[in-house]
Length: 151
Image 1 (tube, rainbow, N blue to C red):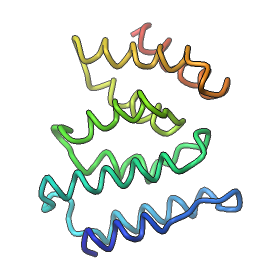
Image 2 (cartoon, one colour):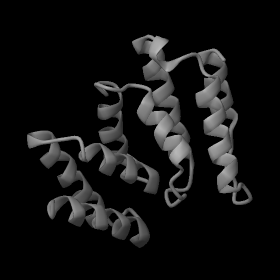
Image 3 (cartoon, rainbow, N blue to C red):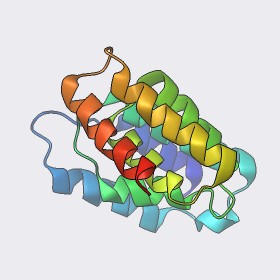
């Protein structure tokens, strides 16, 4: 599958209350498997794909359960340097954190050290204190913040 086809499919994919978790997993597994090898994508294509995946995430309920097919897919696009993914992840969590984006952030924090680590852990704290988010999301984030500060 070409990148344009993948982007169109992602834009059209809608999750409703009736959508089963396995359907989301199957969808992102299929996209990942059928997409032209990600390593062969140019920077602009990777950016476009990451952007559309974060747009998908933004369009979902913030408390939607994490989906590891989605998580593994988005993390695979820009590795190993994450020069596109990292700023997008930080910006997304600064503006509209979700259960999935917090999990993505925590997973990314595990690879950081120094100033970048402190910045991202502080972001977890800010989200856990921000009343614009639901109590559930704040408590979920606080658990990761406490985990990261105890390491």
